[in-house]
Image 1 (cartoon, one colour):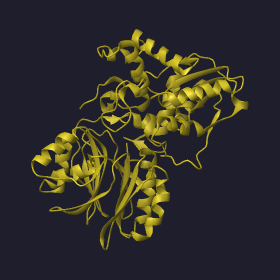
Image 2 (tube, rainbow, N blue to C red; image 1 turned 60 degrees about the vertical axis):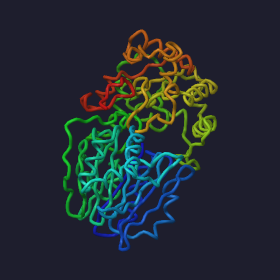
Image 3 (cartoon, rainbow, N blue to C red; image 1 turned 45 degrees about the vertical axis):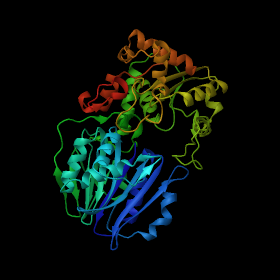
Image 4 (cartoon, rainbow, N blue to C red; image 1 turned 90 degrees about the vertical axis):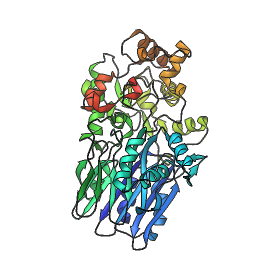
Length: 467
């Protein structure tokens, strides 16, 4: 998915850009970058963070930066920030999102004798494409408006100039952008959890498509928000950090509510509740509290020597790395009926190994309660699951086995309690080796978030979102 952070201040802000960006490390896996405006112009640094922590890679770079405004980014794929010189002046830019019509826009640009210099694996850098669209217009504001109108998918961005920072949220608000304020300084972030330890109070959440300009004196609206919003539901269920808020709703609170809703709809008898670390923990605590059952940790996550983003290219090695991070506790597992909460079941490969480990260590039963419905439709908007084929999704794989290439009944499988839905879930349960498997209903998940369904993107589950 990716995340960004920016700050404008009356004093040097380099360390704050560094720490604020680091608070977004859970959102991306490939690249990290910083850009700071100082006396000598804008300077930047970009590093690969696949094999190391963001802070380890960037700490040696900090002495070369000096300035009172800067931006940083954690990215899934492309190298950022980019520094652009144009008729609009020099600026640095970072983006978060997914451009589905990138080939179409690139082809149009090339026909007009445009060119692109930033590529990865032969693919145009999306951030450079966004910069090009901005520079085709007469002002930065009209350029950002053009980006939001032309892109299919989503694009939120920060643009660092000599005078301040432009912040723009994607057209339908699928990715969050939040503003923080303190005396003579403003900050902008994807995650509000970046603010408290840097002394910022939450000032406002940008609306869908809204663009503001930040300097040390004000947060000035340049483009008003649109009327339609579909913020990604998965932010609360999985992606987001527990201390963050989106649309004024805390992530950990929602996960507790998800767990409580799972418990209210459940009648299974177990000895204790556990959460798959880390994002399953909040759901499990909510379940345990509602049922008044013990919350225990039969798996302990070992992370000191594992970079959070480290993932080998081979799938078998990725599965091994994921398994090696979880260490079982036999004295808690042996002879017990265990219920696990998890944020979701995407592929199920790692979960199958975890379930088998429980039985290997003497568990009598292993029950699973995911906090969202079965994932059936690949994400079109924020890069979730796009590195996998559609048939890698656990639910979609079962549907393919049952239906072949026929896609006529896809929506039937998304209807909770329908014959096809129950058949799919039973097949997944058997494949994972679980004693029982019961998914959260979509309406209960939406109730836990607390926003109307029309303001949430639920595409992964029911393919009902705006395009």
